[in-house]
Length: 120
Image (cartoon, helix red, strand yellow):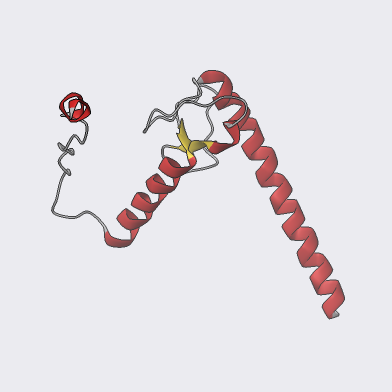
């Protein structure tokens, strides 16, 4: 097989893979957007049709082929929270569980004395 034929075959396979992925994603994305409010499940950022492209569908079990029609394996996350979730999952896979069970919630409130600061 010549280099041109090999490249052509590769281009065809990649195009088919991209088409399959886009078709699969559009199906469950459209379903998830109909089922759930357009709000990030982590940071509660709200979305409108104008910025809806920044809202993603996250698979809770990380299996992109597990798409039950009731949406039980999906949650809507903004781009940033989605990236964070996948980073945390990759770290879990790479490093396993740590001895820490849960990180304490942040308690610092930068706006606690806002009213007093505004009077100054």
